[in-house]
Length: 487
Ligand SMILES: NC(=O)c1ccc[n+]([C@@H]2O[C@H](COP(=O)([O-])OP(=O)(O)OC[C@H]3O[C@@H](n4cnc5c(N)ncnc54)[C@H](O)[C@@H]3O)[C@@H](O)[C@H]2O)c1
Image 1: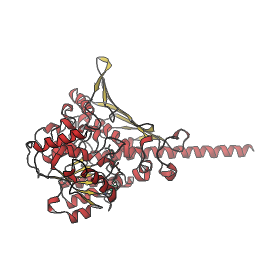
Image 2: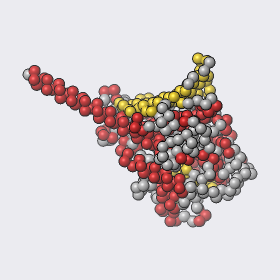
Image 3: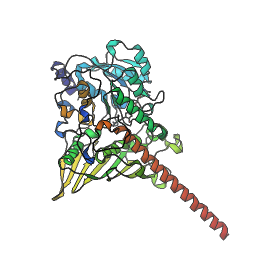
Protein backbone atom coordinates (compact mmCIF):
# COMPACT_ATOMS: atom_id res chain seq x y z
CA UNK A 1 0.00 0.00 0.00
CA UNK A 2 2.85 2.34 0.88
CA UNK A 3 4.40 1.91 -2.57
CA UNK A 4 1.13 2.76 -4.23
CA UNK A 5 0.79 5.89 -2.13
CA UNK A 6 4.30 6.97 -3.01
CA UNK A 7 3.72 6.61 -6.73
CA UNK A 8 0.48 8.51 -6.38
CA UNK A 9 2.27 11.44 -4.82
CA UNK A 10 4.82 11.50 -7.61
CA UNK A 11 2.11 11.28 -10.20
CA UNK A 12 0.06 14.02 -8.58
CA UNK A 13 2.90 16.49 -8.43
CA UNK A 14 3.68 16.01 -12.10
CA UNK A 15 0.12 16.26 -13.30
CA UNK A 16 -1.53 19.29 -14.86
CA UNK A 17 -4.53 20.56 -12.94
CA UNK A 18 -7.90 19.48 -14.28
CA UNK A 19 -10.08 22.35 -15.43
CA UNK A 20 -11.51 24.31 -12.56
CA UNK A 21 -14.04 27.05 -12.28
CA UNK A 22 -12.16 28.92 -9.60
CA UNK A 23 -12.11 27.74 -6.04
CA UNK A 24 -13.26 30.80 -4.16
CA UNK A 25 -16.95 30.08 -4.52
CA UNK A 26 -18.73 30.30 -1.18
CA UNK A 27 -22.39 30.33 -2.06
CA UNK A 28 -23.54 26.80 -2.72
CA UNK A 29 -24.39 26.00 -6.29
CA UNK A 30 -23.69 22.41 -5.54
CA UNK A 31 -23.70 19.61 -7.98
CA UNK A 32 -24.90 17.61 -5.03
CA UNK A 33 -28.26 19.20 -5.61
CA UNK A 34 -29.12 17.17 -8.69
CA UNK A 35 -32.08 14.93 -8.01
CA UNK A 36 -34.61 12.74 -9.62
CA UNK A 37 -38.32 12.68 -9.00
CA UNK A 38 -40.41 10.19 -7.09
CA UNK A 39 -40.42 9.30 -3.42
CA UNK A 40 -38.24 6.24 -3.83
CA UNK A 41 -35.45 7.90 -5.77
CA UNK A 42 -35.62 11.59 -5.14
CA UNK A 43 -32.19 11.89 -3.57
CA UNK A 44 -29.13 12.42 -5.70
CA UNK A 45 -27.25 9.46 -6.97
CA UNK A 46 -24.04 8.78 -8.87
CA UNK A 47 -23.57 6.52 -11.87
CA UNK A 48 -21.91 3.48 -10.19
CA UNK A 49 -19.35 3.19 -12.99
CA UNK A 50 -17.95 6.57 -11.93
CA UNK A 51 -17.12 5.36 -8.44
CA UNK A 52 -13.55 4.15 -8.72
CA UNK A 53 -10.90 2.93 -6.30
CA UNK A 54 -8.46 5.50 -4.99
CA UNK A 55 -5.57 4.29 -7.14
CA UNK A 56 -7.66 4.78 -10.28
CA UNK A 57 -9.30 8.06 -9.38
CA UNK A 58 -8.40 11.47 -10.79
CA UNK A 59 -6.11 13.22 -8.39
CA UNK A 60 -6.43 16.92 -7.90
CA UNK A 61 -3.53 18.53 -9.71
CA UNK A 62 -2.02 21.98 -9.40
CA UNK A 63 0.65 23.33 -7.10
CA UNK A 64 -1.18 25.66 -4.74
CA UNK A 65 -1.49 24.48 -1.19
CA UNK A 66 -4.76 23.01 0.00
CA UNK A 67 -4.91 23.91 3.70
CA UNK A 68 -6.87 21.55 5.89
CA UNK A 69 -7.55 21.48 9.62
CA UNK A 70 -8.20 18.11 11.27
CA UNK A 71 -10.34 18.21 14.40
CA UNK A 72 -9.60 15.03 16.37
CA UNK A 73 -6.48 12.89 16.19
CA UNK A 74 -8.27 9.58 16.64
CA UNK A 75 -9.07 6.43 14.74
CA UNK A 76 -11.27 7.92 12.05
CA UNK A 77 -8.57 10.42 11.13
CA UNK A 78 -5.43 8.33 11.40
CA UNK A 79 -6.59 4.71 11.26
CA UNK A 80 -6.82 1.78 13.66
CA UNK A 81 -7.20 -1.99 13.68
CA UNK A 82 -10.98 -1.87 14.04
CA UNK A 83 -11.80 -0.91 10.48
CA UNK A 84 -10.81 0.74 7.22
CA UNK A 85 -11.28 4.30 8.47
CA UNK A 86 -8.38 6.68 7.90
CA UNK A 87 -9.26 10.11 6.49
CA UNK A 88 -5.68 11.41 6.50
CA UNK A 89 -4.64 8.59 4.14
CA UNK A 90 -7.40 9.54 1.72
CA UNK A 91 -6.50 13.23 1.81
CA UNK A 92 -2.89 12.33 1.07
CA UNK A 93 -4.00 10.36 -1.96
CA UNK A 94 -6.42 12.91 -3.22
CA UNK A 95 -4.28 16.01 -2.82
CA UNK A 96 -0.75 14.67 -3.00
CA UNK A 97 1.89 17.34 -2.48
CA UNK A 98 -0.76 20.06 -2.33
CA UNK A 99 -2.04 18.84 1.04
CA UNK A 100 -1.04 21.00 3.98
CA UNK A 101 -2.55 20.01 7.29
CA UNK A 102 -2.10 23.38 8.95
CA UNK A 103 -3.49 22.33 12.32
CA UNK A 104 -4.52 19.29 14.29
CA UNK A 105 -6.96 20.21 17.04
CA UNK A 106 -7.25 17.77 19.91
CA UNK A 107 -7.19 18.30 23.68
CA UNK A 108 -5.14 15.08 23.86
CA UNK A 109 -2.05 16.82 22.55
CA UNK A 110 0.24 13.86 23.19
CA UNK A 111 -1.86 11.63 20.98
CA UNK A 112 -1.88 14.35 18.33
CA UNK A 113 1.88 14.77 18.53
CA UNK A 114 2.40 11.00 18.26
CA UNK A 115 0.33 10.61 15.08
CA UNK A 116 2.05 13.62 13.54
CA UNK A 117 5.46 12.20 14.36
CA UNK A 118 4.55 9.02 12.49
CA UNK A 119 3.50 11.04 9.45
CA UNK A 120 6.67 13.11 9.58
CA UNK A 121 8.73 9.94 9.67
CA UNK A 122 7.11 8.81 6.42
CA UNK A 123 7.13 9.96 2.81
CA UNK A 124 4.01 12.12 3.34
CA UNK A 125 6.07 14.44 5.53
CA UNK A 126 5.43 17.46 3.29
CA UNK A 127 1.77 17.57 4.37
CA UNK A 128 2.56 17.47 8.09
CA UNK A 129 5.95 19.13 8.46
CA UNK A 130 4.40 22.43 9.57
CA UNK A 131 1.25 21.10 11.27
CA UNK A 132 0.64 22.75 14.58
CA UNK A 133 -1.21 21.06 17.42
CA UNK A 134 -3.85 23.04 19.31
CA UNK A 135 -6.11 22.08 22.16
CA UNK A 136 -9.00 24.17 20.88
CA UNK A 137 -10.31 25.89 17.78
CA UNK A 138 -10.00 29.24 19.60
CA UNK A 139 -6.27 28.66 20.04
CA UNK A 140 -5.89 27.91 16.34
CA UNK A 141 -7.98 30.88 15.20
CA UNK A 142 -6.05 33.27 17.44
CA UNK A 143 -2.60 32.02 16.42
CA UNK A 144 -3.18 31.28 12.74
CA UNK A 145 -1.13 33.18 10.17
CA UNK A 146 -2.86 34.41 6.98
CA UNK A 147 -0.91 31.76 5.03
CA UNK A 148 -2.48 29.07 7.15
CA UNK A 149 -6.07 30.06 6.43
CA UNK A 150 -7.93 26.75 5.95
CA UNK A 151 -9.90 25.72 2.89
CA UNK A 152 -11.56 22.91 4.77
CA UNK A 153 -12.16 21.36 8.18
CA UNK A 154 -12.53 17.66 8.84
CA UNK A 155 -14.44 17.07 12.06
CA UNK A 156 -13.64 13.71 13.60
CA UNK A 157 -13.92 14.55 17.29
CA UNK A 158 -16.35 12.49 19.38
CA UNK A 159 -19.99 13.31 18.54
CA UNK A 160 -20.77 14.53 22.06
CA UNK A 161 -18.66 17.60 21.24
CA UNK A 162 -20.62 18.70 18.18
CA UNK A 163 -24.04 19.23 16.66
CA UNK A 164 -25.48 21.50 19.36
CA UNK A 165 -25.60 25.18 20.29
CA UNK A 166 -24.00 24.55 23.69
CA UNK A 167 -20.55 26.03 24.35
CA UNK A 168 -17.88 23.36 23.90
CA UNK A 169 -20.26 21.18 21.88
CA UNK A 170 -20.81 23.52 18.97
CA UNK A 171 -17.69 23.07 16.86
CA UNK A 172 -19.53 23.55 13.52
CA UNK A 173 -20.99 26.88 14.68
CA UNK A 174 -17.62 28.05 15.97
CA UNK A 175 -15.86 27.07 12.74
CA UNK A 176 -18.40 28.97 10.66
CA UNK A 177 -18.16 32.01 12.92
CA UNK A 178 -14.38 32.14 12.57
CA UNK A 179 -14.27 31.09 8.90
CA UNK A 180 -17.64 31.86 7.25
CA UNK A 181 -18.43 29.50 4.40
CA UNK A 182 -15.43 27.22 4.92
CA UNK A 183 -16.07 23.64 3.77
CA UNK A 184 -16.67 21.03 6.46
CA UNK A 185 -16.62 17.26 6.44
CA UNK A 186 -18.41 16.04 9.54
CA UNK A 187 -18.33 12.52 10.86
CA UNK A 188 -21.48 10.64 11.74
CA UNK A 189 -23.52 10.77 13.87
CA UNK A 190 -23.90 14.53 13.83
CA UNK A 191 -24.36 14.60 17.61
CA UNK A 192 -24.92 12.42 20.64
CA UNK A 193 -26.45 14.93 22.98
CA UNK A 194 -29.65 14.48 24.93
CA UNK A 195 -32.80 13.94 22.86
CA UNK A 196 -34.06 17.30 24.07
CA UNK A 197 -31.29 18.80 21.93
CA UNK A 198 -32.43 17.31 18.59
CA UNK A 199 -34.01 20.65 17.70
CA UNK A 200 -30.59 22.23 18.04
CA UNK A 201 -29.16 20.03 15.30
CA UNK A 202 -31.75 21.51 12.92
CA UNK A 203 -30.64 24.99 13.98
CA UNK A 204 -27.01 24.04 13.37
CA UNK A 205 -28.10 22.73 9.96
CA UNK A 206 -29.79 26.03 9.14
CA UNK A 207 -26.73 27.97 10.23
CA UNK A 208 -24.44 25.84 8.06
CA UNK A 209 -26.80 26.18 5.13
CA UNK A 210 -26.98 29.96 5.46
CA UNK A 211 -23.22 30.23 5.76
CA UNK A 212 -22.94 28.68 2.28
CA UNK A 213 -20.48 26.04 3.46
CA UNK A 214 -20.00 22.90 1.40
CA UNK A 215 -20.81 20.36 4.06
CA UNK A 216 -20.74 16.61 3.80
CA UNK A 217 -21.53 14.04 6.48
CA UNK A 218 -19.66 10.74 6.67
CA UNK A 219 -22.44 8.34 5.71
CA UNK A 220 -20.07 6.53 3.41
CA UNK A 221 -22.32 3.56 2.60
CA UNK A 222 -24.31 5.83 0.30
CA UNK A 223 -21.19 6.06 -1.89
CA UNK A 224 -20.74 2.33 -2.37
CA UNK A 225 -20.88 1.13 -5.93
CA UNK A 226 -23.43 -1.47 -4.84
CA UNK A 227 -25.66 1.21 -3.28
CA UNK A 228 -25.49 3.30 -6.42
CA UNK A 229 -26.26 0.24 -8.54
CA UNK A 230 -29.44 -0.19 -6.46
CA UNK A 231 -30.32 3.46 -7.07
CA UNK A 232 -29.70 2.98 -10.76
CA UNK A 233 -32.05 -0.03 -10.95
CA UNK A 234 -34.74 1.89 -9.07
CA UNK A 235 -34.40 4.94 -11.28
CA UNK A 236 -34.17 3.08 -14.59
CA UNK A 237 -37.25 1.02 -13.81
CA UNK A 238 -39.25 3.82 -12.19
CA UNK A 239 -39.71 1.70 -9.08
CA UNK A 240 -41.58 2.81 -6.01
CA UNK A 241 -40.02 1.43 -2.86
CA UNK A 242 -42.52 -0.57 -0.82
CA UNK A 243 -40.32 -1.77 2.03
CA UNK A 244 -36.81 -1.54 3.42
CA UNK A 245 -35.54 -4.32 5.68
CA UNK A 246 -32.20 -3.66 7.34
CA UNK A 247 -30.12 -5.81 9.66
CA UNK A 248 -26.87 -4.76 11.32
CA UNK A 249 -24.93 -7.36 13.30
CA UNK A 250 -21.74 -5.99 14.78
CA UNK A 251 -18.79 -8.02 16.03
CA UNK A 252 -18.97 -6.80 19.62
CA UNK A 253 -15.82 -8.65 20.66
CA UNK A 254 -13.78 -6.16 18.67
CA UNK A 255 -15.26 -3.04 20.26
CA UNK A 256 -12.90 -2.06 23.03
CA UNK A 257 -13.90 1.58 23.41
CA UNK A 258 -15.72 1.96 26.78
CA UNK A 259 -17.69 4.99 25.51
CA UNK A 260 -19.38 2.83 22.87
CA UNK A 261 -20.86 0.62 25.60
CA UNK A 262 -22.08 3.61 27.62
CA UNK A 263 -25.31 5.29 26.52
CA UNK A 264 -24.43 8.45 28.45
CA UNK A 265 -21.34 8.84 26.25
CA UNK A 266 -22.19 7.57 22.76
CA UNK A 267 -26.00 7.49 23.03
CA UNK A 268 -26.21 3.76 22.34
CA UNK A 269 -25.63 1.47 19.37
CA UNK A 270 -28.52 2.66 17.21
CA UNK A 271 -27.48 6.31 17.35
CA UNK A 272 -23.73 5.67 17.17
CA UNK A 273 -23.50 2.68 14.84
CA UNK A 274 -26.87 1.55 13.48
CA UNK A 275 -27.14 5.11 12.20
CA UNK A 276 -25.41 3.98 8.98
CA UNK A 277 -28.22 1.59 8.14
CA UNK A 278 -30.98 3.89 9.34
CA UNK A 279 -29.49 6.45 6.97
CA UNK A 280 -29.27 3.95 4.13
CA UNK A 281 -32.88 2.93 4.73
CA UNK A 282 -33.91 6.58 4.45
CA UNK A 283 -31.81 6.96 1.31
CA UNK A 284 -34.10 4.41 -0.35
CA UNK A 285 -37.36 4.76 1.57
CA UNK A 286 -37.56 8.55 1.90
CA UNK A 287 -38.72 10.51 4.91
CA UNK A 288 -39.93 8.62 7.96
CA UNK A 289 -43.13 9.33 9.86
CA UNK A 290 -41.35 9.66 13.19
CA UNK A 291 -44.57 9.21 15.18
CA UNK A 292 -44.97 5.73 13.67
CA UNK A 293 -41.69 4.30 15.02
CA UNK A 294 -42.07 1.30 17.33
CA UNK A 295 -39.24 -0.79 18.76
CA UNK A 296 -38.24 -3.52 21.20
CA UNK A 297 -34.91 -4.33 22.78
CA UNK A 298 -33.12 -7.14 24.52
CA UNK A 299 -31.30 -5.57 27.44
CA UNK A 300 -28.10 -6.45 29.28
CA UNK A 301 -30.00 -7.60 32.39
CA UNK A 302 -32.33 -10.05 30.66
CA UNK A 303 -31.51 -13.74 30.60
CA UNK A 304 -30.97 -13.78 26.87
CA UNK A 305 -28.78 -10.67 27.00
CA UNK A 306 -25.61 -12.20 28.40
CA UNK A 307 -22.45 -11.57 26.35
CA UNK A 308 -19.42 -13.71 27.11
CA UNK A 309 -16.64 -11.96 25.18
CA UNK A 310 -16.90 -8.26 25.93
CA UNK A 311 -13.58 -6.44 25.65
CA UNK A 312 -14.49 -3.96 28.37
CA UNK A 313 -15.53 -4.19 32.02
CA UNK A 314 -19.23 -3.38 31.90
CA UNK A 315 -19.51 -3.27 35.69
CA UNK A 316 -17.80 0.13 35.51
CA UNK A 317 -20.75 1.53 33.53
CA UNK A 318 -23.83 2.61 35.48
CA UNK A 319 -26.62 0.03 34.96
CA UNK A 320 -28.99 2.59 33.43
CA UNK A 321 -26.35 3.49 30.84
CA UNK A 322 -25.56 -0.04 29.62
CA UNK A 323 -26.51 -0.73 26.04
CA UNK A 324 -29.08 -3.16 24.62
CA UNK A 325 -27.84 -6.30 22.88
CA UNK A 326 -30.67 -6.27 20.37
CA UNK A 327 -32.90 -3.45 19.12
CA UNK A 328 -35.58 -4.04 16.54
CA UNK A 329 -37.74 -1.29 15.03
CA UNK A 330 -40.42 -0.75 12.40
CA UNK A 331 -41.87 2.45 10.94
CA UNK A 332 -43.91 3.96 8.13
CA UNK A 333 -42.33 6.19 5.53
CA UNK A 334 -44.27 9.26 4.42
CA UNK A 335 -44.71 7.47 1.07
CA UNK A 336 -46.63 4.67 2.80
CA UNK A 337 -43.77 2.21 2.52
CA UNK A 338 -42.70 0.29 5.62
CA UNK A 339 -39.20 0.26 7.08
CA UNK A 340 -37.66 -2.13 9.56
CA UNK A 341 -34.28 -2.29 11.22
CA UNK A 342 -32.66 -4.71 13.64
CA UNK A 343 -29.33 -4.02 15.31
CA UNK A 344 -27.64 -6.85 17.18
CA UNK A 345 -24.43 -6.83 19.20
CA UNK A 346 -24.03 -10.60 19.13
CA UNK A 347 -21.20 -11.55 16.81
CA UNK A 348 -17.71 -12.34 17.98
CA UNK A 349 -14.62 -12.32 15.79
CA UNK A 350 -13.89 -9.42 13.50
CA UNK A 351 -16.25 -8.96 10.60
CA UNK A 352 -19.68 -7.40 10.85
CA UNK A 353 -22.65 -8.97 9.08
CA UNK A 354 -25.01 -6.40 7.63
CA UNK A 355 -27.77 -6.54 5.03
CA UNK A 356 -30.30 -4.22 3.49
CA UNK A 357 -33.23 -5.35 1.36
CA UNK A 358 -35.20 -2.90 -0.73
CA UNK A 359 -38.49 -4.21 -2.08
CA UNK A 360 -40.59 -2.83 -4.93
CA UNK A 361 -43.22 -4.32 -7.23
CA UNK A 362 -41.52 -7.39 -8.72
CA UNK A 363 -38.09 -6.49 -7.37
CA UNK A 364 -35.94 -7.34 -4.38
CA UNK A 365 -32.54 -5.64 -4.16
CA UNK A 366 -30.46 -7.16 -1.40
CA UNK A 367 -27.18 -5.54 -0.36
CA UNK A 368 -25.04 -7.94 1.64
CA UNK A 369 -21.83 -7.35 3.56
CA UNK A 370 -21.22 -3.70 2.63
CA UNK A 371 -18.42 -3.25 5.18
CA UNK A 372 -16.36 -6.23 4.11
CA UNK A 373 -17.09 -7.21 0.52
CA UNK A 374 -20.36 -5.86 -0.90
CA UNK A 375 -22.52 -8.20 -2.92
CA UNK A 376 -25.82 -7.22 -4.49
CA UNK A 377 -28.54 -9.80 -5.16
CA UNK A 378 -31.23 -8.68 -7.56
CA UNK A 379 -34.48 -10.47 -8.17
CA UNK A 380 -36.50 -9.06 -11.06
CA UNK A 381 -39.83 -9.74 -12.72
CA UNK A 382 -39.73 -12.70 -15.11
CA UNK A 383 -37.02 -14.63 -13.28
CA UNK A 384 -37.24 -16.30 -9.89
CA UNK A 385 -33.47 -16.59 -9.69
CA UNK A 386 -31.40 -13.82 -8.20
CA UNK A 387 -28.79 -12.09 -10.30
CA UNK A 388 -25.58 -11.60 -8.31
CA UNK A 389 -23.39 -8.51 -8.65
CA UNK A 390 -19.93 -8.49 -7.08
CA UNK A 391 -17.90 -5.35 -6.55
CA UNK A 392 -14.28 -6.45 -6.30
CA UNK A 393 -13.09 -2.84 -6.59
CA UNK A 394 -14.86 -1.95 -3.36
CA UNK A 395 -11.83 -3.02 -1.32
CA UNK A 396 -12.50 -1.59 2.15
CA UNK A 397 -8.99 -0.26 2.55
CA UNK A 398 -8.57 1.19 -0.88
CA UNK A 399 -11.96 2.11 -2.21
CA UNK A 400 -12.50 5.83 -2.19
CA UNK A 401 -16.13 5.08 -2.90
CA UNK A 402 -16.55 4.08 0.73
CA UNK A 403 -15.28 7.40 1.95
CA UNK A 404 -16.81 10.44 0.34
CA UNK A 405 -13.73 12.60 0.89
CA UNK A 406 -12.80 12.57 -2.80
CA UNK A 407 -16.19 13.84 -3.95
CA UNK A 408 -16.23 16.54 -1.34
CA UNK A 409 -12.78 17.83 -2.39
CA UNK A 410 -13.84 17.82 -6.06
CA UNK A 411 -16.80 20.01 -5.14
CA UNK A 412 -14.70 22.39 -3.04
CA UNK A 413 -12.23 22.64 -5.91
CA UNK A 414 -15.06 22.90 -8.41
CA UNK A 415 -13.48 20.33 -10.70
CA UNK A 416 -15.40 20.21 -13.94
CA UNK A 417 -13.75 17.08 -15.23
CA UNK A 418 -16.43 14.70 -14.08
CA UNK A 419 -19.41 16.63 -12.77
CA UNK A 420 -21.64 13.59 -12.53
CA UNK A 421 -19.29 11.82 -10.16
CA UNK A 422 -18.95 14.78 -7.81
CA UNK A 423 -22.03 14.86 -5.64
CA UNK A 424 -22.59 15.14 -1.95
CA UNK A 425 -24.96 12.31 -1.18
CA UNK A 426 -25.36 13.09 2.50
CA UNK A 427 -25.88 16.69 3.47
CA UNK A 428 -26.21 18.20 6.90
CA UNK A 429 -28.17 21.26 6.03
CA UNK A 430 -31.82 21.84 5.27
CA UNK A 431 -35.09 23.00 6.70
CA UNK A 432 -37.64 21.10 8.70
CA UNK A 433 -40.55 21.60 6.36
CA UNK A 434 -42.62 18.59 5.33
CA UNK A 435 -41.02 16.64 2.50
CA UNK A 436 -42.28 16.95 -1.01
CA UNK A 437 -41.41 15.22 -4.23
CA UNK A 438 -40.38 18.57 -5.64
CA UNK A 439 -37.90 19.46 -2.94
CA UNK A 440 -34.29 19.67 -3.91
CA UNK A 441 -31.95 17.56 -1.76
CA UNK A 442 -30.49 20.77 -0.36
CA UNK A 443 -33.79 21.09 1.43
CA UNK A 444 -33.51 17.60 2.90
CA UNK A 445 -31.87 17.85 6.27
CA UNK A 446 -30.46 14.41 5.67
CA UNK A 447 -28.07 13.83 8.52
CA UNK A 448 -30.38 15.63 10.97
CA UNK A 449 -33.30 13.44 9.97
CA UNK A 450 -31.24 10.27 10.32
CA UNK A 451 -30.26 11.46 13.79
CA UNK A 452 -33.89 12.11 14.63
CA UNK A 453 -34.88 8.61 13.41
CA UNK A 454 -32.19 6.89 15.47
CA UNK A 455 -33.30 8.74 18.59
CA UNK A 456 -36.92 7.80 17.87
CA UNK A 457 -35.90 4.12 17.70
CA UNK A 458 -34.00 4.31 20.97
CA UNK A 459 -36.86 6.07 22.71
CA UNK A 460 -39.47 3.65 21.34
CA UNK A 461 -37.42 0.67 22.58
CA UNK A 462 -37.01 2.27 26.01
CA UNK A 463 -40.75 2.93 26.18
CA UNK A 464 -41.61 -0.66 25.38
CA UNK A 465 -39.09 -1.89 27.95
CA UNK A 466 -40.61 0.41 30.58
CA UNK A 467 -44.09 -0.90 29.74
CA UNK A 468 -42.87 -4.49 29.96
CA UNK A 469 -41.26 -3.88 33.35
CA UNK A 470 -44.40 -2.13 34.61
CA UNK A 471 -46.58 -5.03 33.48
CA UNK A 472 -44.22 -7.52 35.11
CA UNK A 473 -44.38 -5.51 38.32
CA UNK A 474 -48.19 -5.54 38.34
CA UNK A 475 -48.17 -9.25 37.57
CA UNK A 476 -45.70 -9.95 40.41
CA UNK A 477 -47.78 -7.84 42.81
CA UNK A 478 -50.89 -9.83 41.76
CA UNK A 479 -49.16 -13.15 42.45
CA UNK A 480 -47.98 -11.90 45.84
CA UNK A 481 -51.51 -10.83 46.69
CA UNK A 482 -52.96 -14.19 45.61
CA UNK A 483 -50.40 -16.08 47.70
CA UNK A 484 -51.18 -13.87 50.69
CA UNK A 485 -54.93 -14.48 50.23
CA UNK A 486 -54.39 -18.25 49.97
CA UNK A 487 -52.36 -18.22 53.16
N1 LIG B 1 -17.84 6.63 9.13
C1 LIG B 1 -17.47 5.60 9.91
O1 LIG B 1 -17.74 4.46 9.63
C2 LIG B 1 -16.73 5.88 11.17
C3 LIG B 1 -15.79 4.98 11.65
C4 LIG B 1 -15.12 5.28 12.83
C5 LIG B 1 -15.43 6.44 13.54
N2 LIG B 1 -16.38 7.29 13.03
C6 LIG B 1 -16.76 8.50 13.76
O2 LIG B 1 -15.65 9.36 13.92
C7 LIG B 1 -15.77 10.08 15.15
C8 LIG B 1 -14.50 9.90 15.96
O3 LIG B 1 -14.32 8.52 16.21
P1 LIG B 1 -12.88 7.91 16.50
O4 LIG B 1 -13.05 6.43 16.42
O5 LIG B 1 -11.85 8.56 15.70
O6 LIG B 1 -12.70 8.33 18.04
P2 LIG B 1 -11.36 8.35 18.89
O7 LIG B 1 -11.79 8.26 20.31
O8 LIG B 1 -10.39 7.34 18.36
O9 LIG B 1 -10.74 9.79 18.60
C9 LIG B 1 -11.37 10.98 18.94
C10 LIG B 1 -10.30 12.02 19.20
O10 LIG B 1 -10.97 13.26 19.38
C11 LIG B 1 -10.34 13.93 20.47
N3 LIG B 1 -11.23 14.92 21.07
C12 LIG B 1 -11.99 14.84 22.17
N4 LIG B 1 -12.65 15.99 22.36
C13 LIG B 1 -12.29 16.82 21.38
C14 LIG B 1 -12.63 18.14 21.06
N5 LIG B 1 -13.51 18.83 21.79
N6 LIG B 1 -12.07 18.69 19.96
C15 LIG B 1 -11.22 17.98 19.21
N7 LIG B 1 -10.86 16.71 19.48
C16 LIG B 1 -11.39 16.14 20.55
C17 LIG B 1 -9.92 12.83 21.41
O11 LIG B 1 -8.91 13.26 22.29
C18 LIG B 1 -9.47 11.75 20.45
O12 LIG B 1 -8.10 11.87 20.14
C19 LIG B 1 -17.03 9.54 15.81
O13 LIG B 1 -18.10 10.38 15.49
C20 LIG B 1 -17.26 8.19 15.16
O14 LIG B 1 -18.62 7.80 15.14
C21 LIG B 1 -17.00 7.03 11.86
